[in-house]
Image (cartoon, rainbow, N blue to C red; front, top):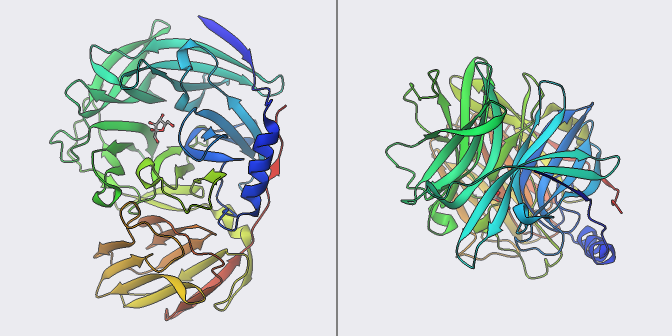
Length: 469
Ligand code: FRU
């Protein structure tokens, strides 16, 4: 079954434009982290390098800062410095995805063609839902999306929570991973295999046999191979407030037998220690360079200052993944160094800065990012790293915990990318990453007792916006 439709005609483009203009004037609007044209964004989707450019689709709702009516918006870039906004590309258009074009991925197939796979969200009533898995071809020039229904979630095995397909190849077989919820309400990975020209159920994989994560849902799975290792990662959701760690992303280094039984006994580890991180995805078709983007936020931390009415949320910067000492490391991609315009000694302009501290050797240190008497503090004291965002312009203790603490990180080096309302902290050259949102208007000064400090200012840069009409 195939269905064709034309891209959104943007009849209410004026409304989006007004929201967009307000967003661009908003001081909190991040300068080097991607967000939507207007409204909310969440997961990065369909990440791929194809025909000399990177495609960055993202879950987008132009209308609202809340999460509903999801479509895929698109940025393209050749260099991760200059981006073009290509508009909203895949929208709910038919029975299969009528309540949302949910997350999914891209794959360059054996014939070199670019294919997308995503979940169609279908609400059956106010509580129950089901999901479809859809393949889409996108012709950006002609502005045509062609959709094919692959299969519908098997409600005899799973609740309607079944989503976020990603395709991988192994031993000349093609597999598809989806996140799912079993009928006894546990998070699981559902694997389909491409057989005789169709996708057939293959098996379920329990990433956490002892259910230590106690998750009721697994979403946004990933599979990749690097340096001969196979890594799976997935997002776990469980009941509870954000401060209790209800949403987290973990990776597992696995060994599989031919039937995809896990034969290794490794433990799951967090990809990012911050509360504001979810749904990461890796670009397809970049060979040995694995580049990841995540959502710098999650649905439990969907809390914003009241004046923020026209936009919400952003992605992380692109991070390159490495495997060192059997651990996953991640660093901002090299290209971002081009954003450094001058070194600074404390004061910076435009609400963007980068701070690098080297050779810390586990000593105590204090870093304060300031705006007049308010600040966010990053402190290492007796090998406990504390990030304290309580003295900023907007906080909501219940939903946005102010204090994050980490023990025993043995900090040697720290690199912090500071944007208007979020920052990413990398420790020990990528051994740990911590994503943090914070609302501190006009921050413009770093006070630190770090020895050997080097600080750089990052230049804010503009995206060019091309609406598809
Ligand atoms: C994760 C998620 C996905 C889903 C999408 C909907 O953030 O819930 O599982 O496909 O967001 O926007």
